[in-house]
Image (cartoon, rainbow, N blue to C red; front, side, top):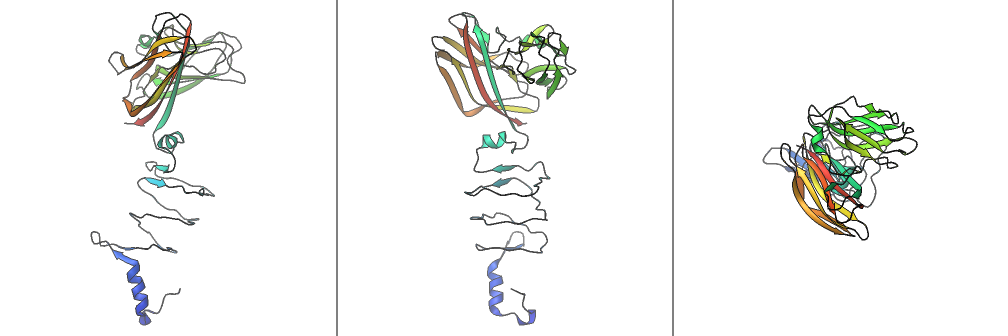
Length: 328
């Protein structure tokens, strides 16, 4: 409808304007209040606050920008959102989440700024009788003391044909920040990292074929990382929280096969302290699982380990746990 001549404004027109506008007495701003359709075109800045929108129709902001500050939550209805062209978020501090999804899924999809999920799995194929061993492929207790002040790592395979890429994710010696280094394996000839590591958190082997031999990663002559033959990834339950983050443990589980039993321990060590047992669990040809009602908070530089005592030599055991890391 065209705007009327100001000298000939009918009372009904003024009444409609009055009903559509409201005054914020605290700020003195006038705003539009409507439960009907709102159409804005060729306008300058529009400030909208504390608005609940239901049964939202199409929004066309093509050729324009819509600056956003604060957190943005998108409630996805029965119909999917259709986006054509590019969508840019200039303010990296603004979180965009899908409200109909779970928080964990939003973290996994990278929609929660600065946070990320960590999945750890450990496996010990042969635990000695009544001997405490860590759940990782190299058996025995994990040699935490071998890290000392940190340093470079030596990587070697038991098979000369393993010449793919080895990717090591761990913590840098100087500041305990998470780093990743990739290097080309040369079979049974050791290769040394260029970075200095104070911890290893993950090891992956990438090639056209899986690693034929076991791959050992050593610090000062002691194996601190291990990829079993034909696994492609180290099954190590050991983990250290990077500097600047707190890890929140969500759930964990452990498993022993038929006819086997043992006693397991979930352990953690705060930086500069000793290992403490957070939980002891019993297994008899079963799976033990625990989901934290309130996630267990583990501060930066905390070491994690899962160990097991078995009643019969040669017993195999596996474990896994999930965490979300949030910047401090």
